[in-house]
Image 1: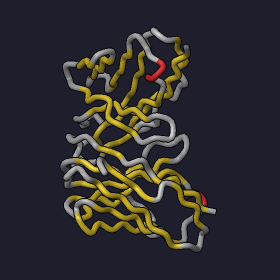
Image 2: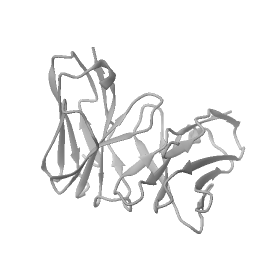
Image 3: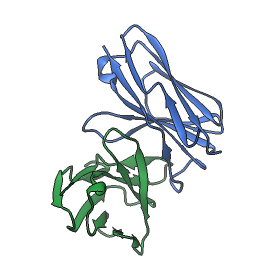
Image 4: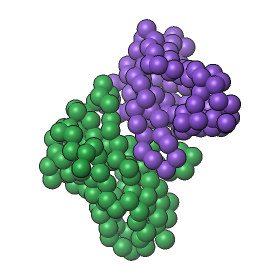
Length: 114
Length: 110
């Protein structure tokens, strides 16, 4: 595997379900990110991790819970979501956190909340 | 005012045409500027960084105007494969965040 991978690619869940999104980067990067992309809206940064430590939480509701067990893996735990949370969730990584470094994106998980 | 603003398009152009996109940003402290490309139902990928002096990569030229706070992307000799959404990306001033525009959709017609 190369680059940034995400599973699952598609997810349909009810509002009472609990699910997790997984991201893995094979680039040796130290920073990982979760973004949300909704139709007609710009990408919204949700979380930033640097060497497994959360360095940014962009006012995201608590029904989204990130976890970074090591510098290669990032999870987004979902529970009691709302229909408006339906979106494409993109994981990204960069060599270091910060705006000087190119971000490499995974293919995304398309989430539908019913 | 939006932090990063782009014309959503779509820009419909014939093959071989030259097309230009503009993007404005609101934070005068921003220091890093990028153009990303996103194909339909795919992830964004870096197209090019934008430097103060302007830079060129093949058919693509990026310019930065700090005084007016806008960035441009020029595509010459458009190809069908250039059809995509082009995202203007700016760092959020003193923060480590990258701020993405909503993107400009380009459709190159045969």
